[in-house]
Image (tube, rainbow, N blue to C red; front, side, top):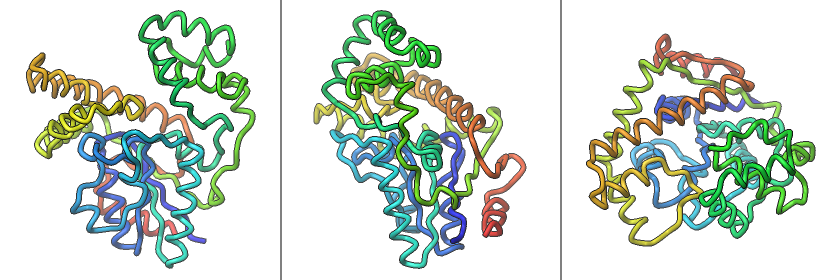
Amino acid sequence: MKKIISIFGPTGIGKSSIAIELAKKTNGEIIGVDSRQIYKGVSVGTAQPNQNQLNEVPHHLIGFKGLDETTSAGEYLQLIDKKIDQIVSENKSPILCGGTGLYFKALVEGIFSGSHTNEVIRKRLEQEYENDKEKLFNRLIEIDPNYSEKVHINNKKRLVRALEVFETTGKPMSENFDLMSKASKYANNYCFVYLQMKNDFLHPRILKRIELMIGDGMIEEVEEIINQKIDISHIDYIGFKELSLFIDNKISINEAIENIFIRTRQYAKRQNKWFSSNRYDISFDLENFSSNDIVDKLIQIN
């Protein structure tokens, strides 16, 4: 079987555009690997491919979940395998593209058995975190001192997740990592492609994209979520809080954009740290390679 090109990199770097051009030249279809882009109703704020891009090339696992639903990493990996099966059966080329590093890693290493979620427990723990995060962190130290060394007290998502796993499985997170479920059945076929760019080039791209997102209806998207009174805390929608404050006339639109820019830069930094410290087969610095050059080189891999 041919290699499955899997493109990842920080937000705003241009992954989707390269994946689309590659798909057009290889009779390919794109599978999203992004934990936020799976949801309907947040297409602008989570930078999902726009309608023109969706019309150019078939996309899978984009905007298919309701805002009130959740999907575990383990479930997502199964969906990826099923989509690859489908695309290959039609004699087309599957191309993975996204920014969720954990999912790419899990494709070849599997995911721990406690990856399912419990919304009731999670919401309770999130409220406890808001009330007294030090108390919650001390609880993690008691039940899992090894894992507590890897979690910062200000990392609400990881801290809550670790305690949720303990409550749902009866085992600390560090033990659960020893109980891995199967990796993707295509684990030996992936070719992981890491797109990089220095901050001096990436940050202006991020700012420009945020401004385009505002123009494309991001404010209206946030207003709709507020009007529907939907809890989207599980999505990590960067910009929701900032635009909510703007809508409430508590900050200006320029302040909202600046705050979104800061959070997005921080997110890109975390992504790059993850990607650079994990496995990839080939890397491209977009300062030195054009999109066409990258696509041409990826075509040659098979």
